[in-house]
Image (cartoon, rainbow, N blue to C red; front, top):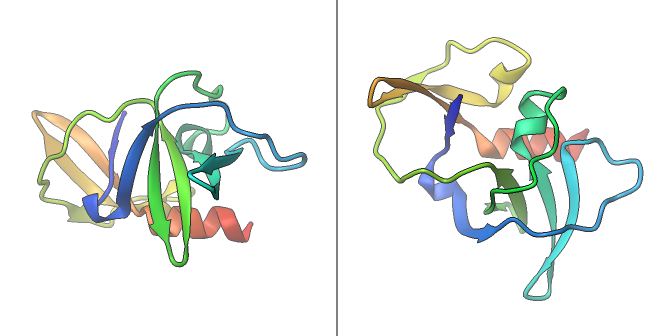
Length: 125
């Protein structure tokens, strides 16, 4: 499955690196990471969208500005930056609350995520 997000959501992309696990945190909260003196909460998109999924050992961390803080989002791969025509809505729960819509890219379906909604859900849970 291919996922996308609004380019305005992404601040920076860094290689996946070890994080400090938080005891008692849900599996989709990978832990904390110190980036240039700023402590960042790192979330795993794959585990958030599919709780039965194992944590990925490779990939990237997309740094996303969320209000006054920066949050890291683990992704398996950053493929490309593309302009997409997004068909809003149409998603069902449980992922529906974090899905902006769907788009088509080279004959494949791309699920466009609302990263702000996803991060808000995780931080409030």
